[in-house]
Image 1 (cartoon, rainbow, N blue to C red):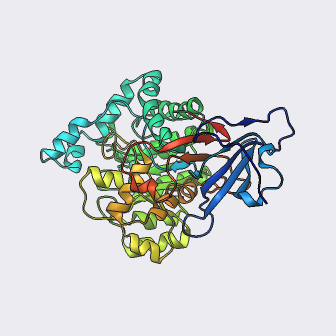
Image 2 (image 1 turned 30 degrees about the vertical axis):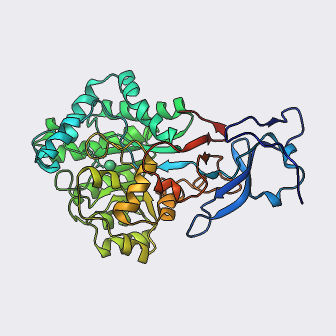
Image 3 (image 1 turned 45 degrees about the horizontal axis):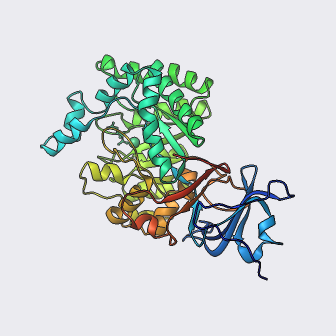
Length: 428
Ligand code: NIG
Ligand code: FE
């Protein structure tokens, strides 16, 4: 069957407006190269595809030839994409983008010979961002952080996770989580918040580690949970941060409150973090450069997602890559995130993170795209997004390219042409 329909001049061009007619969908994109990401591997590609949604939910995603009736009349807005690649909105499942100040000075120090752990032990590192974050008012923190979220959005991110962890006192942690939520509301995208209570030992507790851990577990976690400010909890399990025993206590407290866990695991040394996260049915274990095969097997059994963070590997000039072959062999789902933070990963593009995952960790472009969509959704416990299929949220990006490999192939720049979140067009 063939239909005649007027072609808009380019992606983003005018479309027909059927608002007065009995259109069944709000918006229909025609002549798309759909990367649906459905199926267990690959892009789930549909050439000459169409996608339609109503009330923020996808109601059609398939070949144009399967549309019933004249496509021009099926939606209030109908547009031709002229073959443009259309994917689910990208999902950045690990960021620390709410923070005060920056740490460009430490980048310089490291390139003059200092190392990350030594800077942290000397009171810099995370603690220097803690001072700046505590000092900023809520509005200042919002104003400083919003452009970072806008940068991610402008190249296709419609869901992002933001962690606390630069407050390390209850008021500042809550302030960070509120700012994170406010960013989502302002931009019209989904922000999932994670309470990162065990990120670093605050200076005022230097001689009282146990007191700090107890306070976080017994006093702060219940407040965070009661205020509904966190969707999950996270910790930094590392020689310069918290021990596996401390993390275990914290995870037990989280579990009692019904909060799912994530973990900064095995980044600089192998403390068995991947296995620890898996033993709590963790949503994800993140970093994983030093994880051994037993850790990968434990993640496979628990269904814990491996979140790879090539930005911090790159910025710290690391040389030990995460065990990607073992992850593939054991069928551990792999996600990619920016880890956007002031210290180890000032990376403001998830698509650039996908490119780095390919060149530095040897992921295929299809694995990288799955890592920034379907597997990233899973790392956040979200079942309503990450693929283009009927019933999913209409988080949809049309790109200024036609082939899915181009998303990881072009290094930097912005390629997103049209960005929809929950069915509405969102602008950076
Ligand atoms: O994911 N590892 C801990 N947290 C961040 C770094 C934090 C910082 O240095 O500010 C990370 O790499
Ligand atoms: Fe991180």
